[in-house]
Image (tube, rainbow, N blue to C red):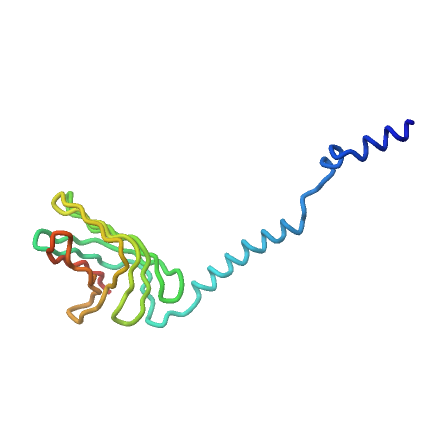
Length: 161
């Protein structure tokens, strides 16, 4: 009878749940997934650019009939010819901010996806659609091709190289 009681206590599910150890295979697999992502990110950064490296700071300029703003935009390489961009141009209460990603698809074209927000003389305008910055051959800059604001006026947003 003592043996039966002892075997019931030892074989119960409650006793079994305390003796379980974490599955080492699952732990190793999760570590391998993290390592693979890390290695892929390094591999992307080491891929050579086709059109030259744009990493670093560039001049950002906003020009309209009402205002001219100058600032900087930073390009951080994420893959071959791909960059995360973040920058702003400010003058008093007027400002333009740009945040998103750029893919250089040719010597003259940068495809932009992200957000360009501006406040000029109290008027707000936000661009969120995919667009292009293009070197139009008028200087050492790429010009935003979405030039017309919500009021129908032309504005120039340039990134200098």
